[in-house]
Amino acid sequence: MSDTSLPRTRALVAKTTTTPPFALLGSLLPIRQLHRLPLVLPLAGLVVLLLVACAIAPDLIAPYAPTDFDYNAILNPPGLHHLFGTDAYGRDVASLVVYGARSSILMAAGAILLGMTAGGAMGLVAGYAGGWLDQLLMRLVDIWISVPPMLLALIIAAALQGGYGATIIAVTSMIVPRFARVIRAQVIAVKARPFILAARTLGASPSWILLRHVLPHTLPQLLVLSTLGMAEAVLIGASLSFIGLGVVTDRPDWGFLLSQGRDYLTVAWWYATFPGLAITSLAVSVNLLGDALRQRLDGRANRE
Amino acid sequence: MGFVLQRLGHALFVIFGAVTLVFLILYWLPGDPALLVAGDGASPQTIADIRAQLGTTRPLWEQYGVYLWHLAHGDLGISFTTNEPVLSKILAQLPPSLALTLSTSLFAICVGTALGLLAAVHEGKTLDRLIQTVTLAITAMPVFWVGMLLILLFSVRLRWLPALGNGSFKQLVLPTLALGFNAAGQLQRMVRGSVIEVLHEPFLATLRGAGLRERAILWRHVLRNALIPIVTFLGVIMGQLLAGVVVIETLFARQGLGRLIVDGLSNKDIPVLQGVVLFAALFYVLFNLLIDLSYGWIDRRTQL
Image: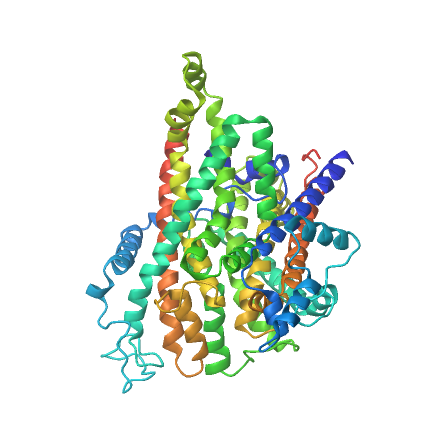
């Protein structure tokens, strides 16, 4: 793991692997020290817990339902009755943000889960098998990342006719190659260690070795990539629904709320501001947690 | 020389792969373009004629073959909706997007490098923490939300800058900032990380012992040695810019390639989509190829 965190080695990795030189974990660089400040991590944890709670039980948290139209309170600024103001139909923006958590977080989590499974499997197989299979899979990854990521997500979302599932798959498509590369690098490192040879000598089958001996050693990477990828997935999902390809319009979603708010930017600053704040606070918190996790696991890997 | 050829070959292979990948995805784009071209109330005969004319009823391999054949002759096809050649459509929309990408890269490189150096030199001190915190927040914001906040502040409140359209320099400022803050933040992190690493190297003590001034050491030796990871990361950022342009052009109602994509998706204008994505992939891969080739020039120790 340490080999992916040193910029100097990363340059060498970039030289020996193939274009475009995606730094393995490099685009998710550490925000060192910030999370060592007191209260920062508990606060980040609290934000994530709160937003997950919104996703699980929005009806318990939101003061109004997302269908509470109030034509006497159209585009009201934030106040006592409506903490984040109201939208063009008199709906409470705070409640819309709370209800939006579910679709945004579920989408990101679904994409990460899918991406982790597909990318992890690709990396495991490519790294362990080596040879032509490795070549084939890695050239596929090269092609995959040569299309600028959001463009690929856009046309995939469109080809799948938009909607919730399409958004998840589109976001997944951006995550898979990164998982594949990082896990492959880790598998190649683990493969050279003596206990793998021992297992092979004792007659263990390749699939047994992969699942019982190699996979556990990639768990730290999987965990860190998933946490940090979560923030990115939320951002991409929001971009897709902002352009209008994302989630179906009848359920509140942060990106969709933002695109609605955009139309009222000149008259109602609160409409676009608060959903964006929700996205940002989730992304910041998840990044801080992921980074703390990464440094802890990194330290362990270095001690080994 | 062998290295250059090998890299060039790989770049061509990747671009060819990307063309195929995008072709396959767009082949499954739902909806019948002929219906959109024919318009409302067209007779079934007209629709069938248009379908035959567009060639969308032919089998996949035949369409792919025809497409490659035309591509090899520099023909990107004819737009389904406007009947113009795709190439001239793209060339017409290229300048505004290119201007935005260039201004954003320039902004990100200047601001990102300066802040990264500043943070690295003051590692662990208040200034470093401040820069880190701002970076953490700005990179966690969706770029289009940053854009909306900028519009709110500079167009709606202060009335300093126009929010929409393109053409003048003033109209380029807000989109550049919206995209540039994020890119600069990421670059700052990268610069800081690699400069700090160089700052801990023993050869700096030698330079200091030799009586070189701190400023000379920083600019001539530290930055030069930290350059490879920074340049590598520029390739990653370029990919994000190409994608961010789509969202930002939508938000600021700008002409450009992003507009072509969004319109192409809603009109099922497959040749245009294919052409734009091909252009983006070509640019992205060649940019990263140049970065790869620049390593030997930046650092003589890199054996090409």
